[in-house]
Image (tube, rainbow, N blue to C red; front, side, top):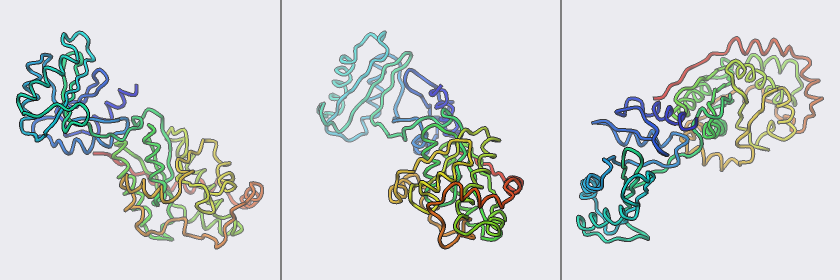
Length: 367
């Protein structure tokens, strides 16, 4: 099932670039490049497909040593190297020549052709050969994949994305564990400008290159915040904002068939991310709330954001809903009883209905 999903994901990732649909072989997946295909573009896309440990650009030959040596010779004759080794693996034991014999035959051929010496410890070039049923493959270099699991094998989750540094990294990590991620962004337009929405849209676009299709729900939250300000003591407002967000997010998650909510929370980073605050917030959700970054600090999260390409967008100054109607001294050790008592003054079902009815959904696709 994992391999089938990985083949589907590779097919989507390389759409429009390759000669044929990727196909599963014995322990490998083959992507055949067509004439005029941009090899660099295929490498760029494949390098971002979760579930791939490593991959190679290589060649395929008939199952005989003569064809294999000729194909390898055509490629290495234009390469510059002083030493080499041949590493053959015979996965198909019906092939009449053993791995050691392949190493000797091809090694002698390469040495005669190039004059390079054999070095089994630290060669300049490694010629890797894999013999599987119906074909023989060769390649000269392994390229790193991102690892993880193929997106789609671990179910669907809904991720709250703020436009900041943390939440895109949290969503990325869930994709890497095989989850398909739906997004929700809470904004305070028209009380604040549209920058946070624009950032959320750009960030989801960047993350979509890892899962090939995404949906983003943009939920207006300013009016809801105003109602909270009118009814709730200042110290509890941030926690109640978050509780309302979780309720709205859970409704969207249920409609999407998602099984959990995801946040970019990091323990102790802000007032709403103390253990007491997180406990108060998660009480309103019947779904698991996953926090992939909970034990990371800001430097670690920022480093990962740079690696995945979301950092530059995340640091663009914006006006997000977290900056609207925020008290100077929010509670950091509030009890559930106090928060629930403060919340009793609100028409919670009405506020949820307001947020859900005004939400706008946007589609994303890659490529």
